[in-house]
Image (cartoon, rainbow, N blue to C red; front, side):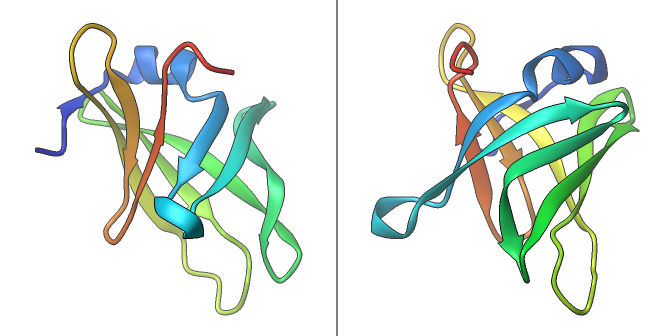
Length: 106
């Protein structure tokens, strides 16, 4: 299961923090922080450019359109879900990958 969609308002509160990209030895972390109305990653992910996220209200659920840098610049869309019991694990679901984080870890 891909989890339960997160409401737009809840997603705005919980998106900021440390996210795990991938699993195993290839995993890396990125910290997303609000800068005005955008999310900015603390790591330069492609071609020395930071990851920039633009929040989207997709049918009252939280989603983000990311500009990952690099060339060509193709935005990547992800939506937020939770999985597990209680507050669960937060996930950003992309077409070909998933980012995860524990909701109380900043």
